[in-house]
Amino acid sequence: MTVESTAARTSRRSAGSKAGTTGTKGTTRTPAKKAAAAKKPAAAKKAAEPQLVQLLTPEGKRVKHAANAVYDKYVADVTPEELRGLYRDMVLTRRFDAEATSLQRQGELGLWASLLGQEAAQIGSGRATREDDYVFPTYREHGVAWCRGVDPTNLLGMFRGVNNGGWDPNSNNFQLYTIVIGSQTLHATGYAMGVAKDGADSAVIAYFGDGASSQGDVAESFTFSAVYNAPVVFFCQNNQWAISEPTEKQSRVPIYQRAQGFGFPGVRVDGNDVLACLAVTRWALERARAGEGPTLVEAFTYRMGAHTTSDDPSRYRGDEERQAWEAKDPILRLRRFLETSNHADEGFFEELEAESEALGKRVREAVRAMPDPDHFAIFENVYADGHALVDEERAQFAAYQASFADEGGN
Image (cartoon, rainbow, N blue to C red; front, side):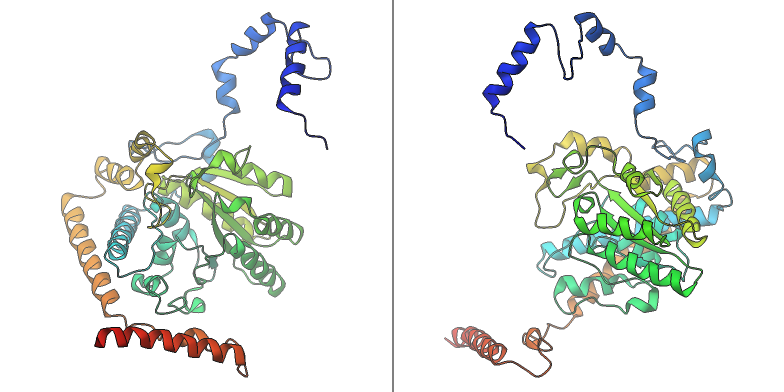
């Protein structure tokens, strides 16, 4: 491969322009053809845009389209009580998330990764799983953890530094949070291959973000799951930003279309529409259980807050972008539908507000009651029989810790 200088490329393009041509391989485009191309019908342009499964508009209106007919049936029997349950899930998850963010700002947690804006993607997909399904999360799936029955306070131990996870993964079929980007997709694929060999009637779902889609681990997971027809759903929460990198720097095509190259279907769903996320994930999990192999679901959503509490999103994105997405708020969207459909009254919302405040208080008290971690636990279980270097490091750390006590005495 040769690298052409900027000057050479400019000179070549200029020469081509004088000859009345643009492009390569002798293709001639006259000014008239350029104008015709620029005047493509709006309908053609719209048809080229990625299809988005949406069952509930930002205004809270229930919609049914021919393209969504395959998914509509998966939420056709959702009752008003279940709709209120989905709303409650999202409200309480957001309240917990807000409390955790506040606790980090107060020095009670070392770090926190907020899910603000992604509640519908997580609650919708989480409620689509069965008890015997197995979930492999990243570090932001607080809503999915809620759906799997993990106590919210157990999510905070790792972020406070008092444990390495905080819950038994096999008690809720919900794996511990994964900090290494994309590696959980490999774990999920391997587990799903085992499920298939065992002949179990269950499925696996792996969560990852748009940034993780650029990781080789994810591509390898796609390859293995497709070749071995693994019963796994890859659920990508495309929140538009991989820390400070926008999605267009992760992929030149919509993320869900990547599945085509690996030989399994992909679908893009409105990630702020809890009904659509519920329906599409139920469909994908049903495919997996039926032996039809993997599916890639791209939940098109938005991270309203910072990537983590160590991030400042104002440095790389504008307020107008956030404001545009706030108009598509997943919680407000479902509330509008509940109100216009008379599925919930003011009493319901008032009771839920009180419940959310009680949850925030419980989380705050639980975190502050957590014991400080054993400072020397880091040196345990490194080697089965011990090691001279580890012993030396332990002694150095002990001396370092003792120096603070000496300063305090002075």
